[in-house]
Every structure is written in C-alpha cells, then in structure tokens.
Length: 416
Image (cartoon, rainbow, N blue to C red; front, top):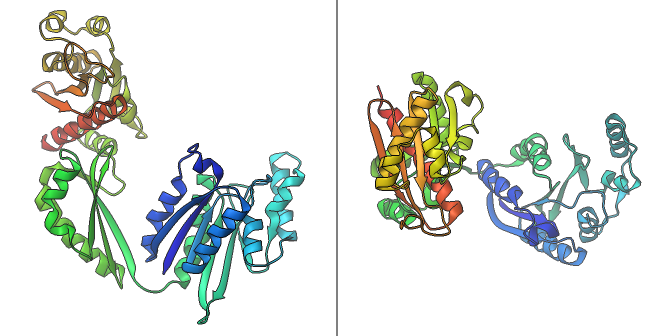
C-alpha cells in the first residue's frame, strides 16, 4: 500500500519547529509493510490545505495528517477534510461529554472554543487522545472505479500526543486490515570513516534491490540502513542477517552499535559489567562529554564527575602541569594526557578521559579550527587520539565528544 504524510502548520514552514512527527511516522510505516512515497508540509490555509489533501487522497491508499486539531481559529484540519469529502461537521455528544469531563478533572472550565474538538463527520470515527484534548479521526472510504479502500488518519500535532495516539489507536487497526509484504529495517552504526569512505567499502552491496542499503552521515558517525521486503517477518529477518554479516566483515571494528543503541548507553553497560568508574576533564567541549554520559539513567553508578577547565589557569588549578602547557601548549597530546590523569586521580575514578582543542571561530596557539586532542588514562596506559573535524564550532564539539566515547568503548571492549 502507498502512504503519504501531510504535516500541517504554518510554524513548520517558518522553521519555528522541526517536523519530528513525519520522521517518526516514516520509521514506523515500513514495519507494517507500507511504502511511504510522499511527505508534504502545508500551512494553516484552507484553500492550500484542501488542495494538498485532495492530491494526497487521490493518489495514496493511506493518508496520515498531523496538526491543525487545536481549538483556535487557525486549526482548520477538520473543516478542510469535511469540505473535501463534502460532509457536514457536527458535534458528537459522547466526545463532548468526555471533553468536559477532562477539563473538570483538570479543574478548569472548558472554553467555548474547545467544543470544535468534539466534532466529527459521518464517515469518521474518533481516535481517542489519551494525552491531550483533541481526538483524532479515522476515515475509511471506497474510491475510484474499482472502489479501492482509502484510509485517512488524522492525528494531533504535539509529538507526544501524536506518538501515543499512533501506538494506542492506529497501529493495531492498521495491522488488522493490512495484508502483504513485511518491510524490516536495521541500522548499523559506525565511526571512523567519512560517508563517502564507508560507501566505497560497501559499494558492491549498494546496487541490491532487496535488501537495499543506504549510507547516512549522522552526529555519532556514519549509519548504514538495511531494508528488506518479504512475505513474512522471518524471511525478512534472514535477508537482513545475511547482508549484515557481509557488512560487518567489510567494516570491522569501526562498527560500534545498531538500531536504537547509543554510544553512551553501550559504554554505561560495559562499565557496569566491569565494575569501573570514569571521570572527565574537558576544555573545548565545555562539559558536553559529561552531559552526554549522564544522559543515561543510572549513570551515577559509574560516572564520578566532570571537570570543565576552559582556561589554562583553570587547568593548572586542578593540577595540570604548567610546564607542559608552556612547552607544548594547552592544545596538545601531552596536555590532554595530563588532563586525563588529573581527572582520574582528582575524582577517584578508574579511567580518566580528556578533550582539548580548537572549536573556533578562530585559530588558537597557531593551531587550526577543528583540531582536537583526546586522551584516555586507565592507570596502566594512556591512549592519545588526534581528531580533525570540519571547522564549525557546534560540529567540533559534537564530533569530539562522540570520538571520545567511541575510543572509550574500544578500550573497554579490549579490557579483560
């Protein structure tokens, strides 16, 4: 079946918010064997929205909309769909009762404007919204000479509401009525090659139509996405497993994870398994490494703490050698090594990690923007890592952080 997503809201066109709803739905539809062919963004204008929805309704088996279900005048999704299908909107008594009960539980009187959220057209059934006030719509009609089934699924714009509605009120009914091929995807995550370099290594596999292979540059490295289509999930899984084995033999140890795994999550699991604790000392990343490590719940069990030493004076005050800074400069492998040792000893950790470099926008100590020195000290050896990243401040900080995590994972995996 062919699907289309229509994201509704002028704020999307103005760049005020990012359309995370579309990317989420795009990742979910293949799991049901549905091919997504179009994604459209349109503002809160009745004429343009109707034109967009008519086009989608005419060419797609399933149309999913997000946004425009609020109580204000510019929330016009319901009105536009009613006009497009030539059906009359009317307030559903049961929906109105539930809406008033919700406001009563919240301790607020229901504004008159919210009554529109209880409206339906004859061909729509309400999809409960368990985390907001706006129910969704499920519209199912025959269309065309052969009477092909068309499904229109209307969901709210707030991402938490949309996802909850999708999971609790849409996936189940869709799975019941859909028959056909299953599409399964797997993402293999790497760090240590450029996008073009990784693509060159796996080039013999890129021409395959099933499973397909695509290469993407992400903040935490290069991702390779495998997608297989088959009659059964078991058959698709076998196709994915065979191709993944080939990819792993080609790329080796630059692969660090897959699917929803994160570097910080994998590192946390390894540290817990080995009973080790870490500490950090950062300069150019300004605490981003420590922040990323602590994004994992329970990280207090293995993360001792982080020192942010942005100036030479701060580094020296924590115990970094002033003579090393004078001889080699703060942006050097020697100072990075000393910083890692200071972090380990100062905070009583088993492993210390440091980052020092030039984030920009100007050179420092005669060294170019994007150069970064990372060091890892486990009390027995010090591993120096040199990085050179694109000269954009945000990229330097992010890339250096993930490089440090990648190298830490490598060390932990090698430790007996």
